[in-house]
Amino acid sequence: MKHLAKYGRVLAGLIFVVAVGASAGRVAAQTAYKTIQVGDPATIRGVVKWTGPIPKILKLPITKNTDVCDPDSTKTRDLERLLIDSDGGVANTVVYLRDITQGKAMDLPTALQHLDQKSCRYVPHILLVPEGAPLQIRSSDPILHTVHMAGAASNNIPFPFQNQDIGIPMRRSGVVDLKCNAGHVWMNAEVLVVKHPYYAVTDEHGFYRLTDVPPGEYEVEAWHEGWGVVREESVLDVATQKEVRRPIYSEPKTWAKKVSVHNNQTSQVDFSISEQ
Image 1 (tube, rainbow, N blue to C red):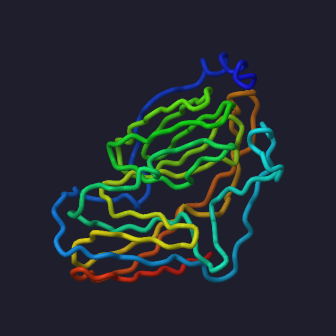
Image 2: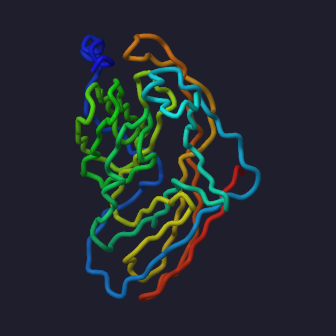
């Protein structure tokens, strides 16, 4: 609690609003979706792999709350924008069906609808939340964090207390960018608020799987948040009331492929992504 005593005055000045903005990012473009009983369901699976030279991955120094933010004494933090395993698999790529209008009921993994702030990281880094459902947020850290939302939702939520759960309704589909306004400038994550369940996030090896797909013709799209840093911005650390520099990232990237899905069959759709 020693970290929290000084924050009462600061929190009084924080903005706490729940608002929604224009839908952000073509990843969520979708017409009305209807739940049906899927007969002879199919599966789409695949892997997203990196090709070509791997760009330099920016790391930022851990300059604040090192006892909590740097338990392993690494002194720097990877921004987690581009994670490539030894076989080239790219984690945290969202793969989904574009413009599907009917299919199974919403069954997105609950783990992707819960955000934790742990060792000054947003966990998980990519989240999937059904439109109209809440994003559940907590902080496992005994220090002040905030969850600043921009994009399809606009909000600034302070977390001064450890293990306090807050649910924030995600009322409009689109992409929501998350950052911390309490001086932990490396903290970042993305929430995709979606209208249908045919979304998956690639695992640490780049693999994904879409199940219970109605037979038909589809466009499968891979979406990545983008890994480049294009500039920095000055922001106010709400805890210290001092300005800090925070990175601004490049735009998301997408790749698309068409696939014909047949009754009770598994279709393989792989993606190769690169700097170009």
